[in-house]
Image 1 (cartoon, rainbow, N blue to C red):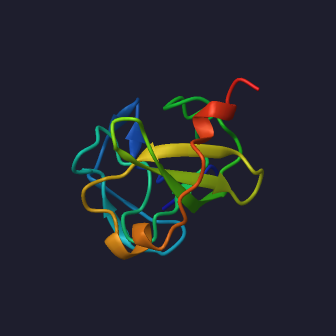
Image 2 (image 1 turned 45 degrees about the vertical axis):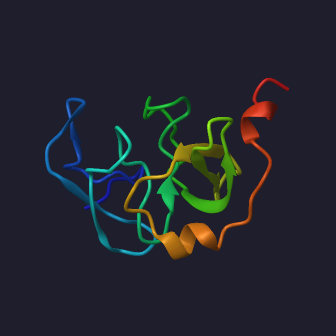
Length: 122
C-alpha cells in the first residue's frame, strides 16, 4: 500500500528496505528493488515511470509525490545511457541510470534529449 508521497509503506522502515519489491504507481506491476547495473531501483523497469519523492538525490524530502514520466534519454561522456523523467505534477526534471532489466522497447521509443545536467546551475 502506498502512502501519500507514493512510496510503499513497507518499502522504507528507518531508512532500510523492509521487503524486496514495490508496486508501480503508474502501471501497477510488482517491481523488484534489485536493479541490475545500479545501486538503487528508482523507476519501474516495465513502464519506466518513477515517483517524485526526492528534492535532492536520495533524500526523500519532496512532498510532491507526482508521477515522473519518462521523457527522453541522453548519453554521458562515457557512453552510459541515462533516463530523463519529468514530474507530471510540478515539472521537476531528474535523470537516472538505466537498469539492466529496463524495458528495451521502452528505452528505444524515447527520443534522445540534451543532457539536462548542463542546465542545473542556470
